[in-house]
Structures are given as C-alpha cells and as structure tokens.
Length: 168
Image 1 (tube, helix red, strand yellow):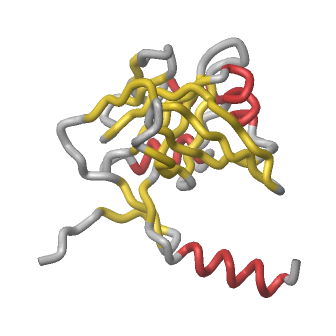
Image 2: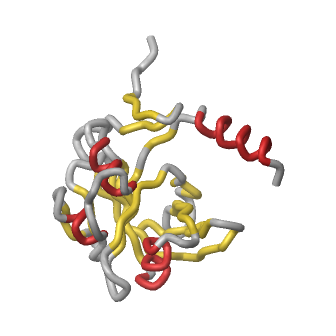
C-alpha cells in the first residue's frame, strides 16, 4: 500500500465521530476487555438482533472472544473517558484482569462482564467471524440489552473525546 494512501485514510477516518465501546468477554479463555470504536448494528430484524465488532487479529481479546463464543459490547457514557483510556491501554493498568478491578461490573445474561454506568450493554453470542487482512470481524447475536437511564454517549472524533450536543 502506498504510504500516502494509508495516511490519507487514517486522517479521513479520524474525521468520523463515533461512539466508544468496551468489548468484554469471560469464560474458558479468560476475562478480557478492550476499547473499540468499530462497533455497529447489523440488523434488528433477524431471529435475533445482531451487531459486529472489529478487533485486531493479534489482540488477546479477539482470541478470547472467539474461544469463549460470547461477549458484551458496552457503550460508554459521556463521563467514562477514563474507562476508555483504561481499556485502550493508555493508563498503566497491568494485565487485563487488573483493568476490571478499577471499575464496577456485573455479570450479564450470558455471564459476560456488563459495565456499570454504560449507556447500553449488549450480551452477544458469536454468530460468525471473518479474518479480513489485519482484523477479525465478529458478528454477534444479541440475546439481551441493558439500558441505563442516561443515553448520553461518549464520542470519539478528530483524535479526541467529545459529547453529543443537540442542534436547534
């Protein structure tokens, strides 16, 4: 790939503001979590609603999700930027297990870590996955959704955190 194309792609994508999620998993492969911005709905109209998450193929979280066969996608509240930094590895937190000790969790319907204070948490069973170049594209069947009272989501764009502001 031409270096200029890669740099232009990265700059272009930095201009797309998106919500921030921490994807978690727990099971035979262990307890892991990572911050991602590549999470999107696939369908609300199948047998189960579905969403997809993209994780780097070298990520221990991707390997754990594929082995555990389930995960939870936690959409962060606008005041949870430190949780985002923690699970992105920006804060000195040690191993994945230590990261979980620094914030509150409950166990969701599938036994997956459900982040306290998240605007929404989606308990998912892995339906399928595809390895595309450097990333696993993991499609999850949503089996349960927990919604908080506050829908104010944390956003990320232009390489910084933001809050959504309603326009007049």
